[in-house]
Every structure is written in structure tokens, then in C-alpha cells.
Length: 471
Ligand code: ADP
Image 1 (cartoon, helix red, strand yellow):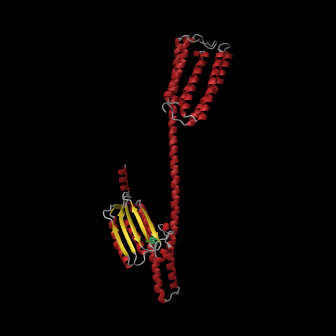
Image 2: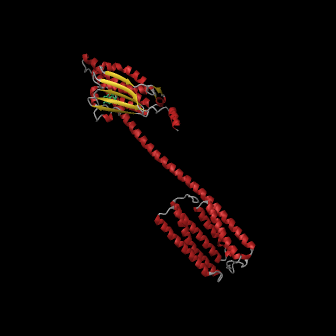
Image 3: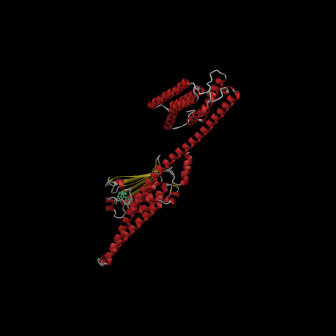
């Protein structure tokens, strides 16, 4: 809004109240001055006219405060309050001029009261408006002096206080008017510049508060996230310790059986083989755990290259095909032509395919089918591994991507397993902004699918290039 300072509704209302309160104080104050003057200079002041002026001032103030309440009840916009403030300041200045006239015009020193209204205007309005009020004060006072000097209006002499001819001495009228003009404009200047500076500080403070509030919320959110991460870490350590302990305890008990002589010599080899198998389980678990730890290393995310996923799948399936053949599985790989390249870490992609395909082989009975396919759609590259294996029950399906989770039918089919393969696959896919999911029917088979968006670049530099391109 032009010509209006941006102050809060509450502050504006406070200022208006302040002006009204000041108006209420002015009336008794003026009355006091008049009574004292009348006492000191009996017959020197026109008492009825002065009392009438004061009554007019009080009535004007009463009307303004009533109107203000009316605006409150209407929940009127700020603009109306500003107009009210203008009316009140102008009214007070006019009453002051009338009061000065009856109090002897140039002879009374109360003209300094104009400054109070100029300061009040400076606290509410921009500097141009407070200068306009300074101008109004100067005009009103000068008109009074000139009209009295030219005898257009009568002059009331404060007999016994000032020389009656002073109001007609040009030098006196000029000096008084000049002093009043300079003082009024200087007051308007200083008051409004102080208010402007105060408002700037206030705005800065509000902005800082807002910033602190946002940062505070951010910190609370981060703290919450840290707590969650800490909880997940503790849970992971608990699970890892448990999983690591089991094979060591088994090995120790096998060895103890032999050492204590409970195993007949012809069965010793069998028990040692079992112990070895548990040691191998332990090694597999440690291997998977090391892999999980490596996934978090920054180098793993930085070491990306443009990969042809078809080539990666070809390499992995060649290595793994032997396992499928040893179980007489029908193993097929279908790759769509002209697949786009994917910016990814080679080891990650190999691990992803290996985990999914080896699971399919592991959990499919002899003579079953394992079919792998790779294609692309508008969202990215899609890989699927389908088998006719043991399947996953609806209760287990939502949990198979959790760390160390193994379904009962899987444990019954294949004793050895870490329960980490799928969680590693999920972590890899999510590193590249993709998703992985499974569909399955118990006893019939499963389909594991993943989607890797082609435009997602985990390498920081590639990410930035992508961002620039978008901008
Ligand atoms: P692991 O195979 O070592 O048990 P994974 O994390 O690779 O661990 O798999 C977690 C669980 O998901 C398995 O224990 C099994 O219950 C289930 N699962 C994974 N792949 C298949 C599959 N192809 N067919 C049936 N169940 C599967």
C-alpha cells in the first residue's frame, strides 16, 4: 500500500490506542494550563473560548475512540485504521492551532506541541508523510501568526506575560516562525529516520527468528533420523552377533564331542565335515557382511561407468549356468536389443544379478525352470528372474528383503543361507534410485523384478551435469 509503513496489525492498533490515550491526556492537560493561566493572568485569557476548544477536542477524541471500536468489531482492514490515524492527527493539530490562538498566538510557547504530532506521524507513516505533517504544522502556525498580524482574526494578548505589540513586529513574527519551521522539519527528519532504522532492525530480527525456527525444525528432523539410524544400527549389530555366534558355537560343540571322545573313530570324519560346513557358512556370512559394509563406502558410489547391462548379465549367467545344469534346470536368458547404457558400478550390477539368479537356482527343485530377462521401458531398465521353485508364502513375502530373514520353507529346502542376499540386492537398486519387488505363489514359483532408471546418476559429477541440464 503506497504511503503506508508495513507494520503489524497489532502494532498499528497499539499506536492508534496510544494516540487516543494521548488525546484524552491533552484535554485535561490543556484545561490545567488554561486554569493556571487564568489564575496568573486574571482576565488575560478568553476563558469561555478556551473551554469550548478543549470541549471540542475531548468530543472529537470521544468520537474517534468510538469509531475505532466500531472498526474493531468490523475487523476492518489496516487501511481504515491508517485513515483514522490521519483524521486524528489532523484534528489534534487544528485544535492545537485554535487553542494557541486563544492562548495569545505568538505570545504562547505551547506551539512546541506540534512536534508531538509530527513525531507520532513519523512512527506510523513513511518519512514523506511525516514531512507532510511537518508542513501542515508549519502552515497552520504561520497562518495563525500572519492572520493575527494582518488583523484578519483578533489577537488575544496575554496581558502581564508578553508585550502586546510583539505579534505585530515583523522581526519577531519572522524569527518565531523560522525557528518553529526548522524545529518541526528537523524533528520530522530525525524521528522518521530513526523509525526507518528501527523497522529495518525489526525486519532483520523477524527474518533471523524465522530462519532459526526453520533450522530448529530441521535439526529436530535430523535428530529424529539419527535416532532411527542409531536404532537400526544397534538392531543390525544384535542380529549380526547372533548370526555369527551360531556357526562358531556349532563348530565348538562338534570339536568338543571329538575331543571328549564321544564320537566313535568311524564317525569322526563326518563330524569334522559338518564342522567345516559350518565354517564355510561363517565365511559366506562374513563375505556378505563385508559386502554390505562396502556398499556404504563413498568410493563404491563414485566408481561408476557407462555399463551395458546385457554384457554384465551375459558374464554372470555364464558363470552361474553350471549350477543350473547340475540341478537339471532349464536355464534361459532373454535380452531385448538396443538397451540404453546405465551409469553404474560394475561390481554392484554383477552382485545384483548373482544374488537373484543364484536364489532362483537354489530354491528350485531339480528339473524346474529358471528364466532371466532384461528389457527397457519408458521408466528405465527392467530385469526379471523367474523360477518354478518353492515359492514364498504371503506372510513371508513382505519380509524377504529384510536383513537375515529366511522363510521356513527356504530353510527346509536349503539349510545354508545368510539371509542377506536380497537385502543387498535391494540396497544396490535403491542406490541407483530404482526399485525391486517380488511376486510369488507358494509351491509354484517366484518372479523377482527390478527397475533401474536410466537418468539417475549416482556419481556426484554426473548428478551435477544432469542438474545443469535440467536448469
Ligand atoms: P538366503 O537365500 O541366503 O536365505 P536371501 O536374502 O537371498 O537369503 O533371501 C531371503 C529369503 O527370501 C530366502 O531365505 C527365501 O525365504 C526367500 N527367497 C529368495 N529368493 C527366493 C526364490 N527364488 N524362491 C523362493 N524363496 C526365495
